[in-house]
Image (cartoon, rainbow, N blue to C red):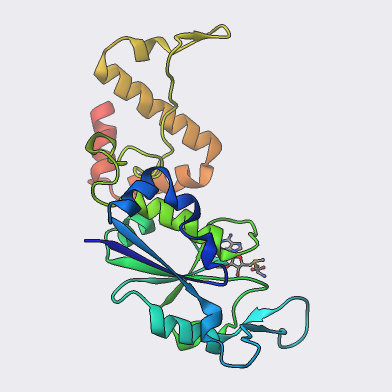
Length: 247
Ligand code: SAM
């Protein structure tokens, strides 16, 4: 099955862009996903092909028109797939959400520009899910869409090799991943931790788990708190079982 990505944008030439190379590029040539950028301007009805107008109530910048975006969406959405609007006002994107999207038929992505989108579009098309890729402001939704697609594509069946299935990555277990090392064994007086050279797989796994926990606690106290909360809330669950095995 091909994962169908339709992207509504004022800059269709930005796609596939960086998704045309490496893993995603190969997957595109192999037909594992398809990329259909749709020019929003084609759905404008006035002679100037306007897609935006001044903000009601005053203020700087321009706002994307609900009528034009709705027409583009109604004509182009991938059947049965989620519809996402990239916006810093959206729900933060998570690996969990990415996995769900990647397991479906595809995705329709609406890329904002200017100050954003007329709010009535969300009311009139309640299937639209506002999604943010982080607490910072980009100049347009296209780069956010590329991030989202990259995260989905690498999870499509056959895109990564079996040994590299991605289940070990940061966030998959609720923690950041452990640190990595490679040759040379010594660099600028720093050596690879001895345990990683021991060949003792149980010890290595325990060391990696411990490092993942330390890094998560230090760098992402929000993730750590959630991880610990989940462990306390389900004492009979997988986390508790792992904890019991350690003690
Ligand atoms: N005025 C908006 C605000 O303060 O929320 C920011 C608009 S931004 C300059 C233009 C477009 O870039 C947005 O409509 C959205 O599509 C995209 N964008 C910017 N930051 C984003 C983020 N963190 N996540 C997803 N999309 C983003």
